[in-house]
Image 1: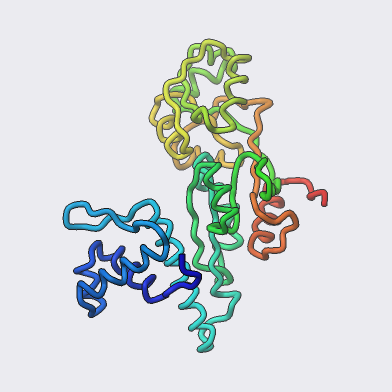
Image 2: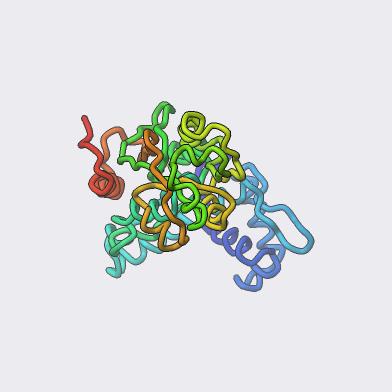
Length: 303
């Protein structure tokens, strides 16, 4: 494999991916079809993998091609930022890209609040937020594809460090009708209720299962979802009682017109920033962690 990268090849690859075919990309670039095909083939040979599959008349990115495109876009943005800086149109601080990995179990509103220090203002950007399965996110951190991960559980992987951000208690919610029915004799009233719960692979699920066995044995699980937004939509439409973080109570009531039924005593969801740094030196990561700890009431870290 070559030890240097032809940036023209990457630019051609980006255009082919955007246009969905060599012919359209060749017209856009002002090149012949054969020339562009040769450039693409040379890039695939250099990288050691196929970038596209053909589906009818279109070229579709392979999984390998999707990953390569992510790198190509980052390289293109960095090149643009370098030119802006050199011409005096930008400073390094204002043009810095920041990539974050999140797990689907975290509520989108919570993710926004945690990332608010880098989402507001012009100091960082563009901000790229990607959703991963937990193990995939760790791989993205180690490989440098993301600068920071947000998770509801600490990492045990070597070379990856978890920084506690804070925690939130939880409350059972339901439609106004369900809330009226089950609030009066809570929690014994839940024994015949239907529930919408996080999927089995979500760390919070085990704690909720234990709570239900203790307080509402016999409750029925109507649906499971690993995406918090889907879980809330199902619950808000009457499929069953669902859990929500105390930190987001007002949003659940206002946006979904759901009502609290009762607290889920003893069950706490914890939040972590996951990084390859034990001591946080990256300015963006440090800003996120400090703001999150202040907002969530986490104790100061023990260094």
